[in-house]
Length: 344
Image 1 (cartoon, one colour):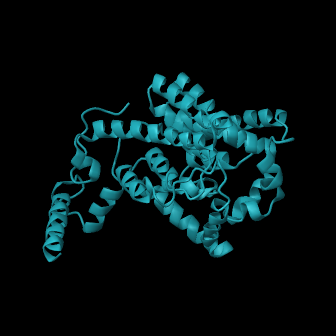
Image 2 (cartoon, helix red, strand yellow):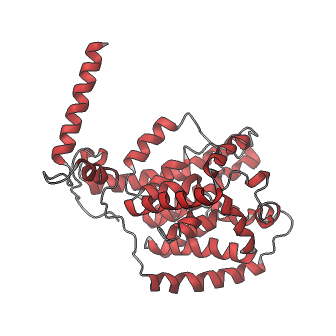
Image 3 (cartoon, one colour):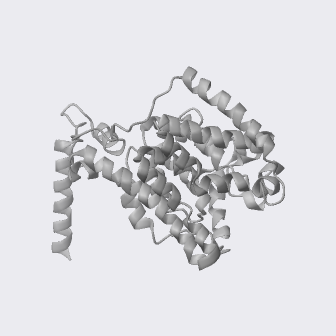
């Protein structure tokens, strides 16, 4: 055992020495914390369109208006808008929303049309930011998570809209934080915004993050469409998160496998990542998102086919990242990124 521990410590020392000597942030004048920052928040050439405030508002405001008009035509009756009518429109944290952040009650003041408007415009804006092709955009809009979120009247679309305006729209992005909070680990600005907003919200509403633990009650229901892999997936997810450093989409895709309560419509936040795939691959992956529907004919186990959607997306982005990094050492953080070519 002593020999094993000695060997392990020796290897760790070797890895740290390599890190200190080879990463692109570590010159002699750099402090330990600066090197650590560059390791956790690496600079990547992610193909995301940067928008000025004027451009953002010029896209977002008309998009919300037009999409809200569409929402007027889709009446939340019968099963349509079930979650909206029974939970979110009440303006209070009931049993079904008790694990949500306290500001979830404000969604009721938006109204159904604006909820639909934020969902559709958030998806369109996220695809535009990722320079989506028309085929990839259509494929994203026709995915199963998009239809299911609109059908239920869930608030995932509000969180998606918030993600398009980080760090300023962090309150919207964290209105359903199970996956969206991982996007804040992509860079220092987002992370600091998350910390500041958490501090402000706790000062106003108390230790509300502890309420999220109540989500375990819903996992106990063992619903057939609750396809969580928690906690067995955690070791793999931690590795995926490390390999996803600096990439909003990859971080959220990896995080879906660690959710203790997971329905396929929760994938709405990662649907825009289809824009970063090739057109054919995006169309095929969008079609794969509908595989859980097979459960109507072939049994409840088909719900687990939903995991293929984020897995294929994450794998596709990881391959691009590998090509960009230049070596496996750069992927794991032991050497600087030496891009062979820009990711597509």
